[in-house]
Amino acid sequence: MKNFSRRQFLKAAAVLAVTSACDALPTSIPNLPSLATRTPTPPPEPTPTPGPTATPTPLPPTFGLHERAKVKNLIYGAAMGSSGLADANLKRKFAEECGILVPENELKWSTIRPANDTDKFDFSKADALYNFAKENNMLFRGHTLVWHNQLPTWFNSKVTKQNAEAVLTQHITLTMAHYAGKVHSWDVVNEAIHPPDKRDDGLRKTKWLELLGDTYIETAFKAAASGDNKTLLTYNDFGFELDTPEHEAKRKAILKLLERLKTKKIPIHALGIQAHLDASVIKLFKAEIFRKFLSDVAALGLKIMVTELDVIDQKLPKDVAARDIAVADAYKAFLSTTLEEPNVIAVLTWGLSDKYTWLTKEKPRSDGAKVRPLPLDEDFKRKLAWDAVAEVIDKAKGR
Ligand code: XIL
Image 1 (cartoon, protein in one colour):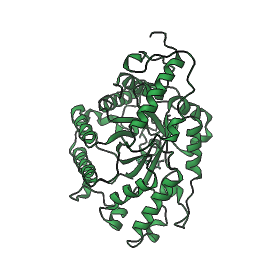
Image 2 (cartoon, protein in one colour):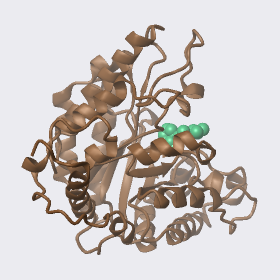
Image 3 (cartoon, protein in one colour):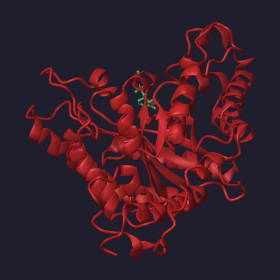
Image 4 (cartoon, protein in one colour):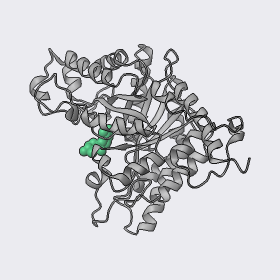
């Protein structure tokens, strides 16, 4: 098994990947067409039976994160903005490292519906990212259909209690119809829980809640299911990894919401964990507590995806070597616990290279040093964070 060739390995991995990604879908649903295209032409030579014993260890260092993930029936990928399509180096790295791509902003309301005309949808930027993903045999994720942020400027003046349900349903069904059968998973509702808003149900006080009441989440999932029945419908949120009262309250409220949706037989298939981790407080991450939460989610029959992973280095020392170690440690602590849960099917980072990260603006350093939150540095070289993700994936059990 030692001299397992790259080609033999890839074939075994591809068989595993297609099986796994399809396993993740609701049982009544046929295979995704886009997944089928990921099966490479089988090589002529005989190959070993795929399975835990067929995994060559250690994997060659040339292997990208998604090739490593495939061996474990996992998917690795990242977010890309449409401006990334102008960077040949970034595109090459995406093709090497990623098995799934999610548009960073291009499927949000403000991008696809900028005009003061509620019927006009512009998918051109998201389509360009979809085409790039497809040309490079990557899966595609959708983010996001219902969110309180990045709504277009016309929203507040045009959407009323009277038309809100129709506007929401139309947005979801039209958007999903545009990509029907082509999207691995859709973030249907994003960031709807916010215990500091002090409602018993933990819901965030948003425009959607104000317009439609607490059933807007159910309405959204039902509309999503009718828009595309070949995709995993996901509830996505952030800020519930740590052992703090705030994160504990959020975990509780999220579980309550997921339980309520499942009890009411609302079509929901997965929880998305954004996981924008902060290296300066990662010591507050307690493996047993988070592991138990993941088991509770899995017990509801839900898959789990890490959807927006990155590690904030804003408050770390300036020294790059020390900073990279701390960032890598945070990746390792979080992912090694998370991947213990067999229902975790995918890991996506929010960007791939430090050259393109929202944290440059969102969490800048006071010393002016560039932030380093992602697996590749700004010259697209693998960092300790890449090593950490690779190591945890390599050590994870197959699913
Ligand atoms: C961020 C994008 O990365 C930025 O470019 C944009 O300015 C703001 O939104 N949680 C989410 C993502 O669900 O949509 C956010 O993306 C990051 C936090």
